[in-house]
Amino acid sequence: MGGGVPGAHATPRVRGEWARHWRYAGLPGLDLLRARYVRHSFPRHAHDGFVVCAVTSGVEEVGLRQGTVRAGHGGIIMINPEVAHTARAGAPEGWAYATLYPSSEVVAEIAGETTRLRGTPGFDRTVAQDPHLGRLITEIHRAAEAGNALAADSLLRIVVARLLRRYGGQLPTRTPLGAGARTAARARAVLEESMADPPPLEKLAEELGTSAFALLRAFRDAYGMPPHTWLTDARVRRARRLLEAGSPPAEVAVAVGFTDQPHLNRHFTRIVGVPPGAYRRARSA
Image (cartoon, rainbow, N blue to C red; front, side, top):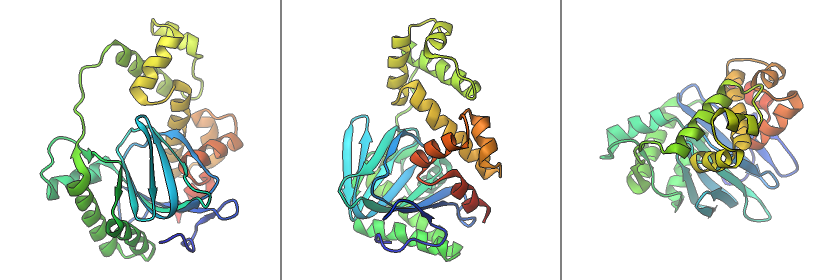
């Protein structure tokens, strides 16, 4: 879709913006997002799986640890799992895009069947100008919206296979953790276990036998964002799973540690791109 009329069930936003974030039963292991954003910006966050988006109009600007990249019409952005990034409009008119969120398992299966990549497959480029593949990505959305599982699944496999052959590589293997990375991993585990009532930074550092500034530095080095930013992102990820299981947003807000439902709504919408109620409805339709 080239920035025109949104699909069915799209969530209305501020003037000129709309979004639909959903899952099609015929494509397990894949989330879909079609949207147009003008003023909306995504704060630093990461995903469990991959992000592949085709920009259909305007310009998207993505902030990564190594710098900022931009993509306009015909551009494709590829982000590997757990890579912290931001996103915002790179032009006054904003940007429209069709996005695929395939799980690591889906990408690994396709890579194993169609490429010679060894180890853990991923992308070694973030941006590519590839209008043909961009059009195929929008066709996946159209097929899913039409309920055509055969076409949607076929196109998904074709697109991911071609992306991997053109822009793929082996993701770095895990190396033994240094002292700072071990501290960051322990801090992350504590925050995951105490998400609804996390300790203050100084107390957390004290429990881990380090200083607050050393913990901040180690955590940012390991995860691309400070602990409080990571915690908000982690709360939203957990909220997504609870909403998908059918829990109402008010209960989810308390369960993941937000003060109330408006607090959940604000952070969820900023990170996911649609409000939690719309996200839940799109998965129960």
